[in-house]
Image (cartoon, rainbow, N blue to C red):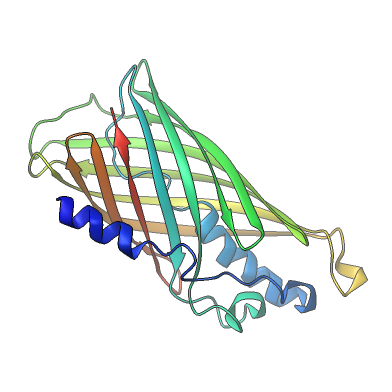
Length: 237
C-alpha cells in the first residue's frame, strides 16, 4: 500500500496537464455552449469516493484531481490547446448525526478558481460488513471564476459502495449537473453579459484503497462523449 501511495504522489498531474482558457474571448456562442459542458465535467467531479457516511464526529481531508481526456471538438476554447484538461481540489468533510455528511472544497489552476460544497445523506444504515452495500445521496453546488467568465454548477449523485476486503472498496455513482456560465468579457460585445445554460449526466466507477486512516481512490468518469478520470488521496477519521 505504501508503494501505491508513493506512485500516486509521483503521478499527480498538477502542472503536467495545463488548462488553457485564452481562446475564450475569440470563441463563438456555439463553441462556448460546448465549453460549458466540458467545464461542468471537472467542476462537479470527484465529490465522493465512498457511499459510506462518515458518521457523527468523523472528519476527512483529501487532495483531489479531476481530468478529462479530450474536450469536445466543437469546443474551440479547450480543443485547440488542451488534449487533456482538469482541475485540482482540497476537500474537507465532516460527519453529522443521522447519516448526514457535509463537505467544502476549493481548487483551481491556470487562473480558474473554484469553491464549492454540499451535503450527503446515507440512504441505508451504515455497515462495515464485507459484501454489504452502502448507499448515499449527494447534493452539491460550485462556483468557478475566471477573468472572462464565471460558472455556477448544481449537481446531484447517487452512489453505491461495497467492502470486499478490509482495504478494498469499489464504488459506482450516477448523477446530473446543471450549470450557468456568465460571459464577463469577450471580443464580441453582443455576448457580454449573456448566460449560457447546459446540463450533463455523469457516471463513475472506481476503487477505494484504505490503509489505516489513509484513503486512496481512483475512478473513471463516463460522459456523453470524451470520458475522464479522477483520484483522491487523504485521511479519514
